[in-house]
Length: 351
Image 1 (cartoon, rainbow, N blue to C red):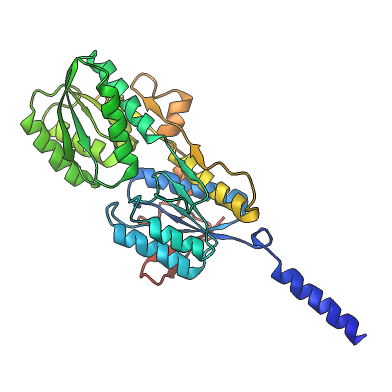
Image 2 (image 1 turned 45 degrees about the horizontal axis):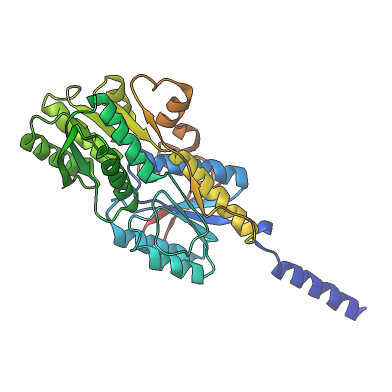
């Protein structure tokens, strides 16, 4: 009899030890480049949607500024020390975040990369817009509004950010196909805040008062340049194409102060990031695409009220995020704040 009890106990222990991620609730860390722009809130909302559907918990934390490489690395390292089951990361530096992601893999923590490319191959999948193509779309729209002639400015974002650098390359490669368009400036950087972008925009408009068209490759540079154009009395007079959306950019598009916004689908990125990682954790041998393109389209004053464009301009953030927390915009359900080892308040979000 004793032998039977021992045998049964051994079977129970073996079963418990062999329980994989499919048999317990997973905790995933979602680490954006920043937390303030509407773009990252859309990724957050998409991740929460998927977490609810998959029955997993999320830890959402990123640096306050999109140029704070050290803080983003610290967040990744802290999630490794917490032994989360997986990481969804938008790396602000494709090279600088390579080693932390490799460290996570060695610790048995897989990563899915979203938004911006990461060097190396220590990740499960890369889910993002084809940013080079997005830049080309912006160039085509600007050329169209100019009638293929005029002088233009490209205000860049920041050295080292792979996503915006790819957009800038795509824009320049495409605009060079339009010989009637002359580039006045393509070597000035607006930085990652609207204030620095505004200052750079002001300087560019003072240097080139007769500019005919402008392209900006992300949300902060687009809004900063919009402010500069407005203060100079040139909003709606200079042809202007930007990237991404926010309430103020949508309003400017409707007023025809912006002639086009290249739109990504960050909500879908967040959603697919969680779903892809959960699938991998449940079955590491599953056939998972190495590169998933979430697409890009151009919103214009003429098409902005069509269902497809409207959904991209105004994703359902309120359905998935609470406005009660300005820092993290954590979902209403299951929010629990814990102080992590790096000194950050990271919300644990129940799906």
